[in-house]
Image (cartoon, rainbow, N blue to C red):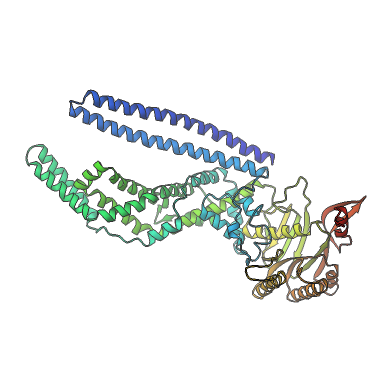
Length: 589
């Protein structure tokens, strides 16, 4: 932890120096812009009577001002970029200290009908998602949630390789995240994809060359007028013809300009993200697929978006009334730029969705890689094929934040079922969630919190937190039954690792014991694999009749009127319970 903290603190210090440097340059830039404006104003004042000099001063002043504005915006962007890098590394220090409960918790992704998400603290306050999420884009956040919920046992090795490689690329990941954070939230990628896919062109193809013809004609006419070969009526005629042609499409061009002006910053920033990816060397197959997806016919997506950004910028020049009138009259400016934009959309509209999805996919992968980087002592499971197998040595829940957590070793194979008994607070539920989370993390491609791990993949399904449904007028017991039916039905199609915690709590003890035993027997006859935790010691008797059922327990001891737990997973059946002792200790009875 100390080493990790020092790495991030060193980065904060370095990026702070860079931000200060750009902040200082920004102040100087502001002063230079002001002085430039004053010099132009003074020059125009003193040479007002000489229009040639005034014109020259105005032109030079305008060019200088535009250059200084562009430079100022670039300096501002760099300052903001380093500010984001500072905040990114400060956040890592904060989370390293255990402070992450103010982060987005992913509650919107909770699904009561999911195989396991509601039972294992995957989403919500203090959840695994809240702990690992570093996505900078809403689409990346959605894909991260999807990945954690996927219950996908295919291509785990590819995901492992990608996460391993990305975890070593700290500079790249933070450059990507800082750049993505600067993206404005006003544009929804789904809306952009929908708009670009359904856009109908309106500029006739003739304007691909007619604009140049109008410009050439205007230059010739102005040149002839300058040497007194023709009258000014010719210049005015060409000019007003240009305005008339442009005016015919004014409404549609204005609508297009309004649409794309909202997207200029979006596409510019996405272009930067794509460029970062394009200039990064990858080896993992999954990452190479992402990179391949953003190169179309030998041209990178970032270059294509740069062309779009420039075209949008040129069209935006029409908002300068003086320039717009002159450029449209002599060069059909609006139609030329609108045609360029429409041709870009025709060429690239099928690829935009793929580009945005690739960026979101990498955004999600970076969160997983960041988690792996922050936990170098975690172990990637050694993967194998064939029947399910899981062995975790000294496994600990990834969210358990105590000074000296107790690790436990478990080894379980296909067809085995463990019955775990123990006193209240002895560690049963935490152990169930540790095993469950280890399976989820392994399937995602993450390292697990254990000294060693081997794993032949399986899907996970759980029933640990049942609640009654007021909306559906369901009792607690009926909700339990529905969940168990959900599990049994799922098992008919493919194997699952089943985790059950104190089932059938909504009925009396005799019914509970009988029903629980029958369920375990049915699961065992169907070669089910899993774990059940229970306070009902009578359920452990089923192990005598089924060789693949084993009993384990967590112990509690009362010594000198004090309760002690060792949180250790042991072979056998619990003998010490603590409910009566706790009632007495707390003065309830």
